[in-house]
Every structure is written in structure tokens, then in C-alpha cells.
Image (cartoon, rainbow, N blue to C red):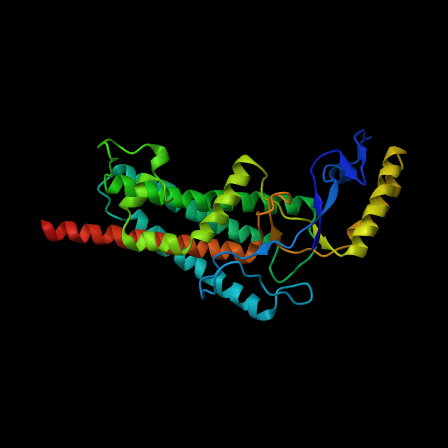
Length: 331
């Protein structure tokens, strides 16, 4: 699988020929094209983690079906069913967590101003991405639209991960969890990972869920860490076959010749030819050079991620409610 991938810089290397000196036109369109110089990369690491999509579970690392440059109709129906449930899930969780009778004011803050706020952001990100790139239309997008997709995907992954941390903090404060020394847990000890001290205080039902979804958490951690520390999440402009890749390289060489000679009208015409090559595919990724980094279909993966957060938030809610009931019984 070949992708035409922008580097976002003003230097490019093909066949060991590097161009570093570029004459920029004052024309905005030319500048936008230059700011998104492309290179080719090949990879078949396309996965779908935690394939649940709110209606069924079929395991991990599974590709979405494609037919003639789009998702097949059955899969589109599955996606539609998933979208329909989002508002109901959000209304249920936001109401339960906002009006929950917390004993800890800090737990209440992490619930109302942490978890619920993040859920509303996730809901909005899904809506924005659906509007920018409808799953039933695999049409090439302008550079601004691709950047907007990246912004929403990055916000989505960051807030998915933030929901996990918020649930951990809610549990720590509401249950008044202390460390082995009897002192408050440090920040690094509060989280849902096995190596964090809070983990051992979680109910069996939550530990079981986290264990069953370990590969999903590994994917999320990889994407979140790449976003924060390494390569931000990105949507490739298009996928190309070998013949198209060869033609794109030929056109790119001519485009650079035109730019160096200040023949910007000619370069625009060649860029238009280039834009007609390839097929947009709704995938997100970070690095091509990290061999274990996956590439995922973002429409489906976002619903899987949303569904996982909803399930986990409901599990925590059930355990918090059980704790209140047991406390009332002892009184």
C-alpha cells in the first residue's frame, strides 16, 4: 500500500537528490503547496483496535472492509448505527457523573470539569470529522481540510487518554486511596496501568476489563505518546499505485524546475495533474519509520475508542454506586 505523504517542510529527497533552496511565490496557493511537499511511503500496517463500534465485538487487529474505493454498505450501516448511539451515551454519562453524590469535592471536580468536559469534546470531534470527511465519500480533500482532520484527531486521542486519567483520579479521591506508606499517592502512581499503585485498588471487574482490552490500550498509548512526544497524528492526502507513484515523481521533478525558473503558472498546471492521481483513504497514522506503529481507519477507530471509554466509565460508575450502597447499609 503506497501513500503520498506530505513532509510539511521545504526540503525533499528523492533518489538521493536533495533540494534545499526554494524560491517562494507570493501567490497563496503556491505557498500552500510548497508547505506540503510530498514523499512516498509504503506500508501495510492497517489495523482496527477494539472493534466493537457499539454494537458488536469481533476481536482486535482487524481491517475494515473496502469495496471500489469505499467502505462496503454493510460496514457503513454499522458505522451509522454507532453514530446514532453517541448522543444517548453522552447524555447518560454526563447526567450520571454531574449529579453523582460524591463525598470528595476533588472527585466531583474531576468528574464534572474533567471527565464530562472531555466527553463533550470527544462527541464534537466525532461530529467535526464526520462533516469534514463523510465515511461514505472517499473524496480527496484540500490541504486545509486535511489539517482540520489532524487537529480533531489529535484532540480526540488526547482526550480519550485524558478520560482514563480522570476516571483514575475520581477513584483515588472518592475512595481516599493512600500509598503503601500511608501518604497520598503521587501523580505518577495514579492511573490505570498495572505498574501504577492505584491499579491494585481497582475492583476486579475493572481490572478484568483493562486486561481484556490490553492491546487496545497499547495502541492508544502509542498514539498518545507519538502525539505528545514524537510525530503528531496525520491523515495522508491519498493512496497511489506503483504507476501513479512513478508519474507523481515525474511531475514533482518538473514542478520544481518550474518553481526554480519562476514559471509558477506552469507549476500550478502540473500540480493540478498531480492532484488527479491517487485515491483518498480515511486513514490516520503517525510515523512510517516506526515499524510497530499502526495505521487505522479513523471513522471506525473513533467509534471503537468512544465505545471503550463509555464501557469503562459505566464500569466505574457501577462500582462507585455499589460503594455508596454498601456505605448506606453500614449506617
